[in-house]
Length: 308
Ligand code: I3P
Image (cartoon, rainbow, N blue to C red):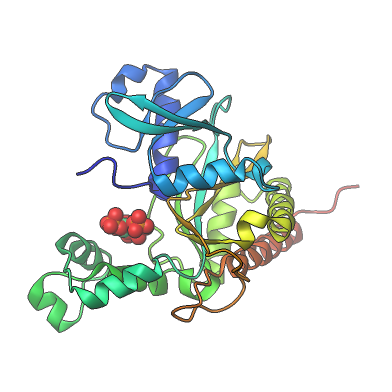
């Protein structure tokens, strides 16, 4: 596998968590660990270089969104490879609970649609992932060929999960004890998401409320942001991090597929995608998340007996 190829949201937090846990034991155990990250000095992590991501982080350092993205420290060379050096969001946290939500109604770039039309590149690995999640998902032709196009796989993932309907999906969760859950491919309905939020926050209303306020603050910053106006955000995530009875935080991460629009153009981020309009539905997802956190809070508050 070409290690320089990808910058993954799910892998981001999964790998970062492992870095931190292992770091507290022995980071030497990391030898051979697959991933996009390298150990760096305390407080920093190194992520495999991506032109898009590095360009975005650089611009974000001068934008109103700066408080909501990891600090960016430039590009460094290590072991003959290039890395982006950025803030380790888990620094100082002993047992964080983490949730990665991929935001937007679409997870593929418009150019991937064009490419898929031009050349029918069938992927066996994606066909296998599809069969594993649902053996009935591939059609007869796909079964016969033993492959699916990446576009077909991505669109299937979007409709199986809440991406297409709610503009975001839960990619993975790490619980306080370090157990990692990735079984969210079929998490689609509001009810399923509310149950997941309760599990993730242990039903704690303060934590839910903390997240709601942080989401609201991000939304306000997005509305002011020049960067947001002028970029299409695809495959970008919000990383939710809290410690039991402790700090609550949400970060905007993963800009590997975030691209700038031509000079003078802008996006609304709250419209449906029609090929050519480049809309990503980021705000649709954010509003749905806000609504779901409110609903979860209300449900939990109703369970809590009133204090004297
Ligand atoms: C992956 C997910 C990633 C995508 C990756 C998929 O599927 O959709 O977003 O990478 O494509 O395999 P899953 O979540 O089911 O594991 P990009 O966003 O970078 O395109 P890949 O196999 O080509 O890396």
